[in-house]
Image (cartoon, rainbow, N blue to C red; front, side, top):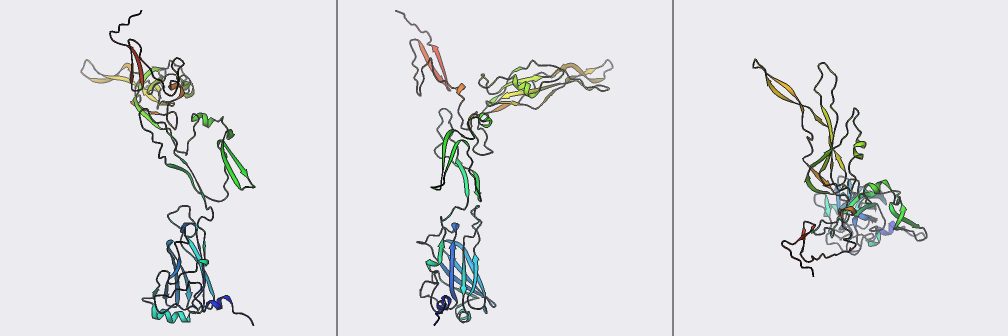
Length: 420
């Protein structure tokens, strides 16, 4: 004799619900819901020891039933619809919305399926128990069996986001360090699909297939290598993200140093002018400015336009020489009164003084992303004596003064030293 099927058996038992005697009457007919199952996604953060899933409401609009399931792991619900004359064992899949607060989330927070049986008994029970077209059920009165819930919390990797801690910065002298709580600088979010890891500067990636393992280590000369134009450009450091710029330093007034002694019919190129500027570590001071002035330029015309000079300025900002926009020097004019008393504007034969229109101040730029001075800007030893902490002791008739990072050695006033 054949045995009844799985769904036939379920028409007469509480499954897929845990057998809890509901507080509301009349009870939900066992023939209404024959099977159900749910998958809790990553964004549900479902914990079997704390969370449950239950049938929270049945709604009816005309001849359409709506079964609403809830969970205390999320505020999102899942609904299934049935026509009151649908046949036995009707199957439907449903899912919730995605987590809008997680930019990497594209899949639903949770999903599931529902199998229903004949709805005649449910129609009669709904009429007696509902109010305003809704039969509201208490949480966990009709709780889904835990075995019918698949939990994917921490079960797989959905996407990869890459970031670095903000770089360690060298504080200014006598200033406290700010490296204790460095924020994370995110470079890429929600990377999915086939992802390849590329070795960077002095980086070695080893893949061990047997152990299903990737090992990332630092190794001199590995990866991109240690000789690179990018490394040279940033003095051995690299930007942590595309928009990272060198930190700004002090604002200091501009000081004109001298003009380039270059004149000629063809003005020099920007590259030629830069070649004449002092190199890094040549004793440049922030705000030092050099200028180039052309020969007198006279354009043709009838009458000819006023002659003029062209000039460029280069200001040292502690990192590089910053070129100004082109500056034009035009003739000076004065009022001239004729013998008849008429007033006219005439050129004086002189031009505006050089230099002119120089930047009033310059914002210094640190040489390194992490701050700190260059090697040529530090003292490594004094007469061959060096270390992390060197004490200078004044001798007979000698004062040693320290002011704003500058050490001054001077003879004491009225010092009398007896030599014996």
